[in-house]
Length: 69
Image 1 (spheres, helix red, strand yellow):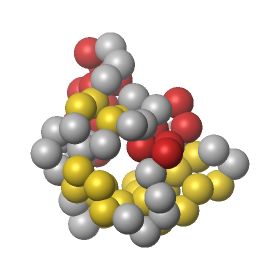
Image 2 (cartoon, helix red, strand yellow):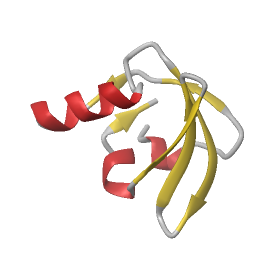
Image 3 (cartoon, one colour):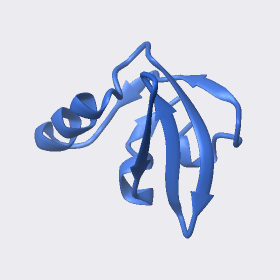
Image 4 (cartoon, helix red, strand yellow):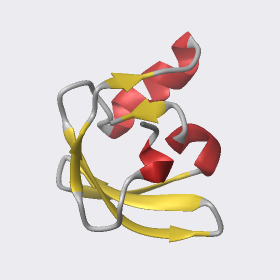
């Protein structure tokens, strides 16, 4: 399921990062890699704030839809 459907406060394992090459590279640089964990902190106006690799990161709804957990 896409990251946008994950429950707040629940730790999830990243299964796949989709999108074109540039999008995947951008998300990988932020720490979104297959096998890694991600926790949704909050969702504001469709944008998602997550904890990934001990960092708090905000991603747009469009980007969050490309991250499968």
